[in-house]
Image 1 (cartoon, rainbow, N blue to C red):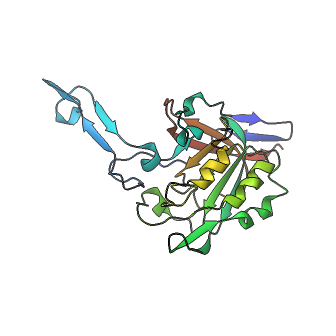
Image 2 (image 1 turned 60 degrees about the vertical axis):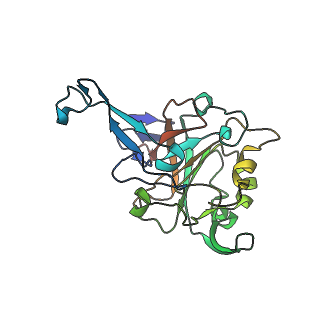
Length: 254
């Protein structure tokens, strides 16, 4: 189906681009030193929740952490004393989004005596003129490989975002930030979480409308540029929820 944005432009709803990494108990992404998610067959007396084992239905308990095991969207409740719920956010389920690819810079970290890879403001300067009127920005880190679909990030000091990006996001009223990394902040920063705090303006005046989506995967064959984003979240009353960011190409009407 064609969904017209104006007389000149439309999106084709039959050609979605899924940016989510699914929850998979056999091969999944993980972070923060957590064990793999578990899918356990429910057994109660004569009841067996497995058709393969003689039951009538498949009926399993699932244990996982959205921050570690799949693409997830989080709100400021992730870092506030009061746990605000992502399910209560006023999320624009459809909005204009700009996809960019960014090559991290190598940087010495004197606090932790490590060598970090950081995406900074220089990566966004080329989109200064095209980002206006977009509510979301999607950052694809380079190199981009399918390893991201089932990578264990724990203890690897993954790439993260520099806080110098935030004034740029504020200037252009970006509400939704999507990345293909486990966190916008350094894996081990002593609990500072500087980017999270500045992006959501916590604790002074928490922004309840902004969201961060982490552990997305942007396929290599998807070009940088303008899209329409459908940000789908599971209805969890929690600071974060498994999510499915869907992109649609904007096409010119003939």
